[in-house]
Length: 255
Image (cartoon, rainbow, N blue to C red; front, side):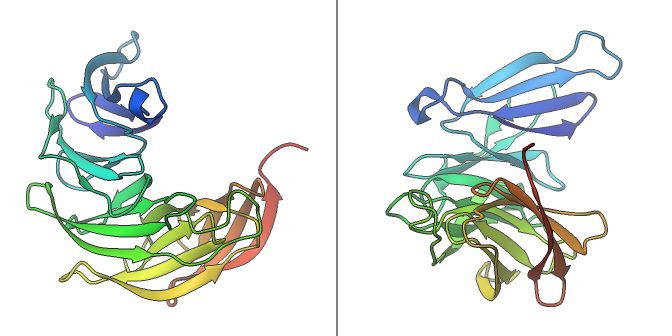
């Protein structure tokens, strides 16, 4: 389950979940409300069926939220948010540009949706770009970039598995983690064409399996959650080249 909070007259929390058709028990998209100062806690207000809604992301300026549909077919959808009403589908789901989309984010300009597709044992991980209309609706698929590489962990790293896509604090580079290749791929997004230009690759420790990145508030450091090695690594971020350079590494679990 994942969640994001949208501030309106009250706090609306949207949660996404796997559905029975994707191995879960949820309905997909659930809206909960919390009035500040209300002692009753979160109250479920609406639920909307959304197959395999494993990750959600909000538009930076519009009342729109996007969700993955995590399955081999792969899909993404947009929902409009209205106070006091259920999230409203803004058109039919579109292909995510790969299998098992597991993360997405809206580019800071609000004109493109970026999606990380995990792939399968036989299908590679990819990063896809969709153009967004003026009202936040999903439009054409402008690019799909296929990752290449592998790692030493048997059963998990025979191929690439894109797991997150995010934009650096300056809005200059798009970074994509790949759990299967132990790599962070760096791209530039063309604001006109919506295409990704490969810029650099940052090779992390073999077998680490980077899942997610998080920038520190200063923007010069990046923390990686390394799923396969159960570690957290601190990297120096070179904002000029879009590359990561390891500084320190600690276990993510108690010994």
